[in-house]
Image (cartoon, rainbow, N blue to C red):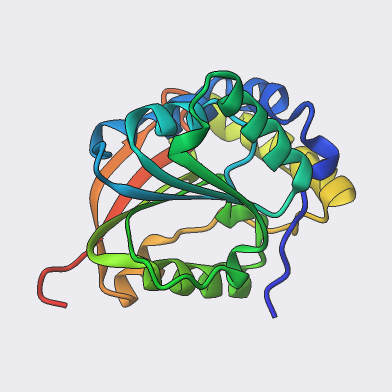
Length: 215
């Protein structure tokens, strides 16, 4: 059984908190994927939260499914989209992603700052579930933490990341764990990196995976 986090407690302030913690990198990293998404694509946004990229996705394509386990996150996200009269392009679902088993395959799956909310074994199970929902030539877009390369971010993340993750652990049951490297796990599933971009804050990475042609 996969244990998921419910960010309902942080829903009203989540966007503001993540913007401060990431120095705006949270939003920048998610926007890296927009040029890869076409209007005709069917897109699944997992752990969608209430961030503005939901609006940008719905503006760009005509068929979006946005899932979050938090009712407050879904309500906030849906309210923003409907306020702009874009609700006809998106279906919001309040549910655990592991319970989502529609047979329809997706061209694009977006999992931004989502997989790090799981214990490692659960994270791998979620990844296996997500790739089963992708079309054979579909892409998996993941924005998440990465180890920084510059001295100042290394010092900052060493000092502050434990405090931030412990805060999330207390209020939303976020597991305490190191930064994950997803590349080897996805390589075992037959997916390779076709795009990778490190944000200027140095500790957020946007990565796109696609199934190897030989698979």
